[in-house]
Amino acid sequence: METKKKLFIGELIDSIKSFDYYKEVYKQSIARAFKYFSILILLYAIVATIVSINETNKVLNSSKSFIESEIKSIRYSEGTLEVDDNEKKSYLNDKVIIDTSIDNLDEYSSDFILVKDKFRITLEGKKFDFKYNDFINQEFDKQTLIEALDIKNYIFGIIVITLLMSYIVLFISTMLDVLVISLIGFIISSIVGNNSFRFKNIFCIAVHSITLSVVMGMIYFIINTFTGFEVKYFSTMYTSLATIYMITAILLIRSEKNKDNT
Image 1: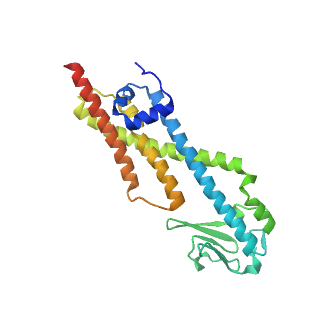
Image 2: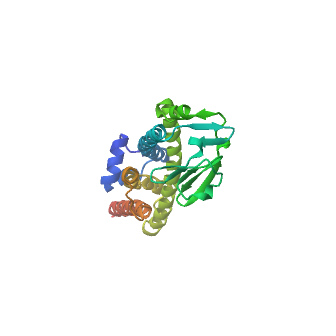
Image 3: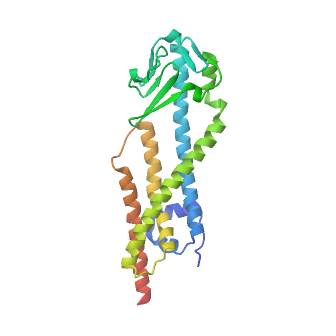
């Protein structure tokens, strides 16, 4: 029998603080578990979107200030960029290098390099090279670029795209975690539960078991973005915590069943 429905916030709080709540979760339908999971991930995606757009706005504003104060002229035409008569420019402590007098990206080892006809982005040690004309077909100058860096001109589109991409990535990655935890839970329940747990029951428990991990992930994302602070093996702790919730819930439900049978 389906248990009485609660508001999402009530389910979230109970999933974190009350193992007794898992006696109700155990009886939930797959559809209800999916609904809870979808809202949980949407909450994470909204937080990630707000933080990401805020950081993007900071970078764009900083870039605008740099262009306005440090660069006299910019001209882009037919796939070729020219900055201040091809003088070399550096930005953010040499993390960004602009040198349109050359076309060899290997001249520098910065995170972001712009040369005559292409640019390179380095992320986590991996280099990604692109030609300007793969993305830009229109000519522009300094004033046009400054206007393009104003996030207010396309804020709605950025919000929609960032939210959608964040939701898709988080949904898939977190669902994979849930399925792994479900598999672990199903194996454990087969050992201690005498096959009295169906996979549906285990899946519903796993969805709620990952709640605290997701909330911690949101908090960690915010702290990491604003401060750069990193926690080693956070992903391992993330999965382990959810697994502990899963195992504890299974043992508690099994204990209650044993009491009912005596």
